[in-house]
Image (tube, rainbow, N blue to C red; front, top):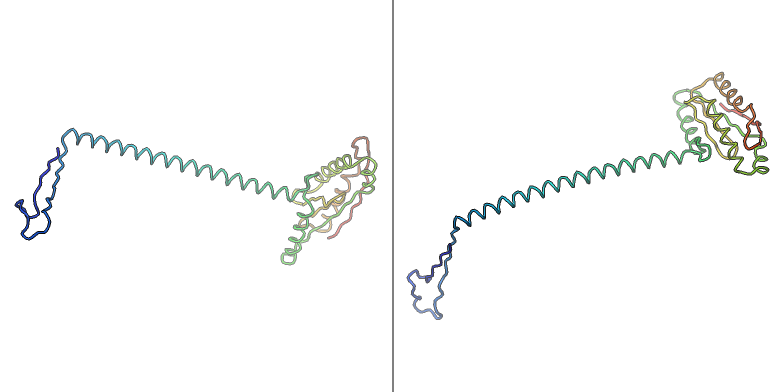
Length: 214
């Protein structure tokens, strides 16, 4: 219900004396809500409260979903980074460590041996007449020969040692924390792993040359 009342600023409905302009009546408006209107307002308030609660719940659910998605992306990125670093340290043909990994390991043991006094052995091996295999039979068959050699060498070394392909037909082995006798025993096993003939695509070879440095 709305009530309207009008009166002059003087309070008695008359204009002030000496005024140059007609008096302006002020308008007072009173609002009174009827009982049905109050019920509708309450219903609207309840509806808005429920709607706000639903919006908050939807926002929280969305944020949780985004956080889980971001966490999954971070895990994926870290996994991909580890895989990239691992591939960067491996020889793609034989899956052995590559030259870069071996040089890094040699630098590390050279620095640490000055302080801890531990001794390490470094073995180098190249294949005799391997270039002839590539020239006569092609690089595809030569790669298969290298893969066979890599598997044999891996089976003859200790799990703690670092076996690497330096490139071409050159392989290297870094034996950690060994004395002279142990290093010689590992070198013998290294050579013995290639004593039997390697047969790949009808080609037989077993020539290898091993050199060592402590």
